[in-house]
Length: 465
Image 1 (cartoon, helix red, strand yellow):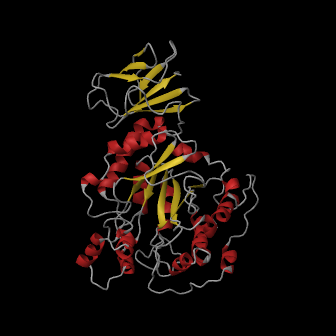
Image 2 (cartoon, one colour; image 1 turned 60 degrees about the horizontal axis):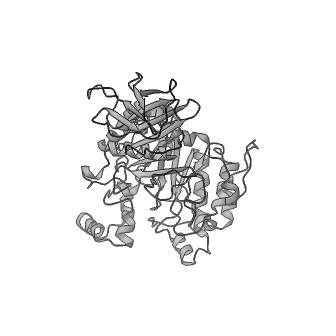
Image 3 (spheres, helix red, strand yellow; image 1 turned 120 degrees about the vertical axis):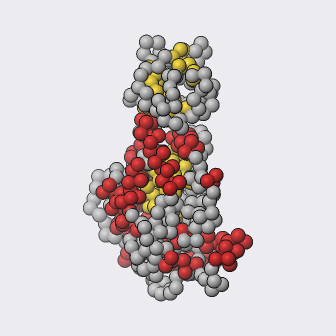
């Protein structure tokens, strides 16, 4: 970070102790020690696995150049990638600095209620907003980010608060925040880095105070950490912070966290695992995980130069959702708003299309469990989910067979007990038990207009083994 003025940076190490909030009243939940062994034993709050689908929102000063990637500053100034250098040369004066994009980040048309209504229509159950990306600009008025935050610069508004209020007042979604631990160009981080992280000025005077404030002021139920800058979790005091989060914070009983809390912790420690960006293993994992991915195939932030083929189609997005949920994961689907705070029509369309698909097929997604088989062995693009209490197995198929007959190699029917229905259609379907394993389902003969949806369908199979 290089704000216009850098003042108050040499804060004493004692500041962290002063900033820690007073202990909350005792509560009945088990307490956690500041060790990975203890923290990793925490049971993930049930709501997260039941939710299955969330919306990621990458928004910040990088939305002003809106070119190439949300890593614009790094690619332009640090790596000096030619297309970024040329872009600046062609469009801005030679003296222009990245900080000069700050006042241009106006959020002029940002309407939190409108955003909340779109997210509600998407069928998502939680959102995660980038409260601060690696550029260091905070979407709230952080006192630890003087002159490089949304109150002092650009919008002159508390974006985080406006969206939190709208989400909680207008929707049934959970509110979550992304937070980058490090900042590319912050002088204290660079100084710590040069000491091989033996110095800890940056986390003590910046990262940790901001994290405590974020949690106390906005009470996010997802805290999505990112960007360790190559520093280990001891440098960030991640286990100490997480122990406070799980023991004392106002969201201690409902908050979920990910696995990006220091170099080496990803896919190993924390709440749910992300393992890598756009992670979709295609098989069952033993630990709860999340597939964070982008509608724009090439970027998390908005790109003005994106073409229509750069965006995943709704069919491709439904496939991602179905595969992810069948293998025990959640899908966190990213959009990038524009500098003035609008959600572009292509993103809005994809969100609303997903919502219309989930209105029909949500029963096969929300609050489901993994089944003994994740996908079918006979017919490709068939994925399974399960509701054990209801004795329901869902077979979600992404291609409607031209024969009108769907062969399922995994379910074994029980004569006189098994029933098959197409979600959105309702009438019981005829089926035949196959000699070896599986069943053949006679799909209804429907016109395009009679189809319950367009991009994948779900059969509810009652009493199969």
